[in-house]
Image (tube, rainbow, N blue to C red):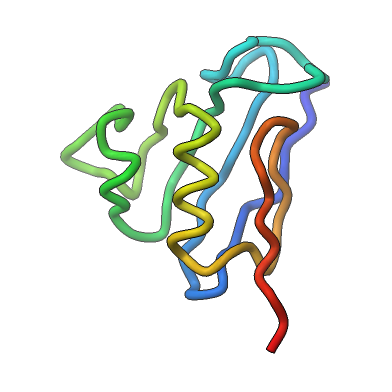
Length: 101
């Protein structure tokens, strides 16, 4: 069975699903890879320009998936939104936990 990573929630409230397993749009397309190079993003809470070139349905950007997103792009999105406060990322994506103030 594929592991489903809990939804990533960032410090500014932005959230997205970040998945990698043998039935996701990721590379390598495998369960339990040591490190992923590309992952699948799903259903972001708002339009994120850094992700749009990977958008499956540009007419409904918050109701679709984003295929084969490079892990550095995902890390950049998390950083842009202040770091993670909830969730989990697949191996290869830097989680960038938000600093506590």
